Length: 178
Image 1 (cartoon, one colour):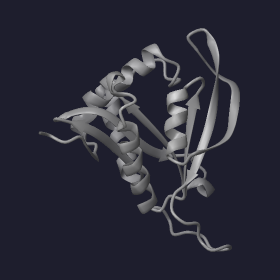
Image 2 (cartoon, rainbow, N blue to C red; image 1 turned 180 degrees about the vertical axis):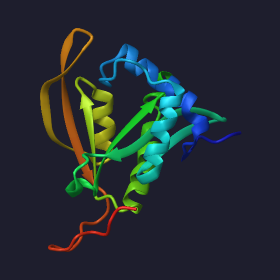
Image 3 (cartoon, rainbow, N blue to C red; image 1 turned 45 degrees about the vertical axis):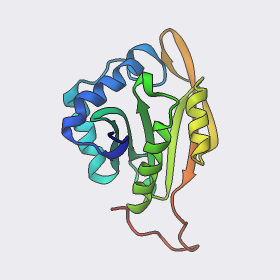
Image 4 (cartoon, rainbow, N blue to C red; image 1 turned 90 degrees about the horizontal axis):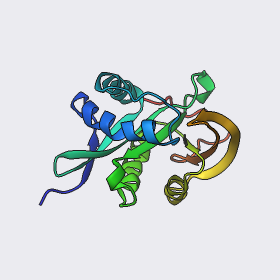
């Protein structure tokens, strides 16, 4: 029987990832995008994330049923050891441990590349995402109030973060992420 497993995303996964993401864009305020990206755009996102961070998929019996990725937290040089992470699962796959499996591998890979902090923003309300992030060791650092407007309502975004790896000794810069 085929096993559920996490692997690196490839350009061939763009169609599946776009299909997983589209219902979040069109039917929820979980993301503030208002137009779902097509497969070509998702392919560009996969390629960009793979260059310096990571983009992973969760595969079950040959079908991509979720994905997670890391990207820059901010563009300024002092933030280069920090990254922003996200995870999305097919609507019928939520609450079954796939998000945890994706995040475990994603956070491991980001730490191995030299990133020191992972951050995630969660549109409120989103109890399931809050539980996942708490279970993965993320701590709340603050909430932006009424920061995004979608579907005729203003939404808060709560930010969480967690360390990746051990901090360098005081006064020393960590090695550059690779």
